[in-house]
Image (cartoon, rainbow, N blue to C red; front, side, top):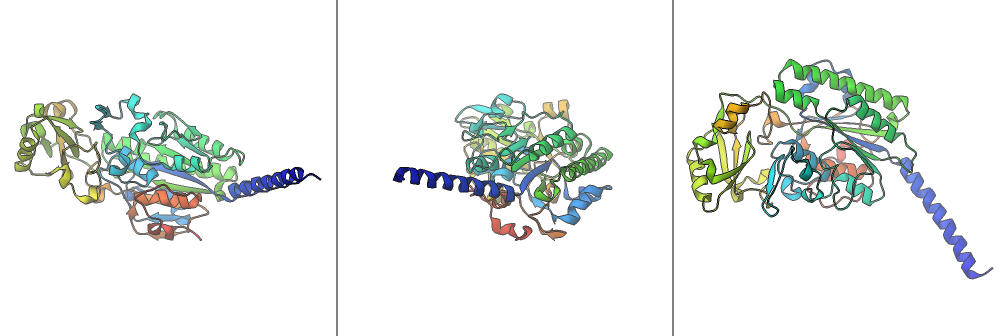
Length: 408
């Protein structure tokens, strides 16, 4: 038999064996569904009857609380969760920010910019996974609508806040039920109602209590569907949130236009945090006026920011930052007259107890009935990479901080 034919046959056998090995590896890998319940505080588990959350807690791992990054805002924290990076290293410093190099503003209302991958630095989990041959899907997450480093999730959706929770869950069940070659092993899922009710009515409102009960029912539906389809024992659920919620007061307001001339600055964001770009030649004047009036807030030059904030080393960080003491808010007279203050808000210092958030995980790769101490949410990226047998991209997290949550 010619040598080339022998080599070709051996190569074919090796390729078949490799294919079988990869297929077996995919079958052995348990899926990970990362679920965010926006604005969910640790004490919400005790606010009302939540039998399905209770079951997940009994069968899984619950942290005392999860420590968010600063500022305690939706986009900043969601992107830190999936990259394992602090804001200064991933570039999403706030829900609203200005890039001086591009002279463009990023905001929740500017979808044209929101979906551009150039804003999102670092490597989110779906990019890490897709680059290593693991399929992913997203039923909403910050950054999932953008092409980042030339990569998107295999399946993704344009964000639609009106899409019923049950339909979101049904999509996830459909994806998990696909054949091994096409099934995503990492999926994100996002719910915003509790955050929305907290903003409208305040964290201690009956509306939030009802939203918690409804969210528990949604998880009950999700659990029943996982059990019905035989996926319950091969799916890891990781439930997190991005920040807590506090009740500001209309009597505790800092009017910026009573301290400085707003014509001398560009203000990006009202509320617990204001990012201020002084006009040319006005930096010292603006800072000293704010410093002299400093009461119920803290003002910093960019280079003086507390190290714990981890936002100072990025070009999108403005020269001056104001951080209100909780529950104070920063605004202007005209903005206040038009909008007042929200009944509930977030964004304050990430070390404030009311800004704490949640971590709850249940599945074949997690311990059962275990309570653990608090940890920073930047460690979740490394944890999920470990569960999916992925080589993590450079990040600020550490598997050592969360390895004790995982079964061996």
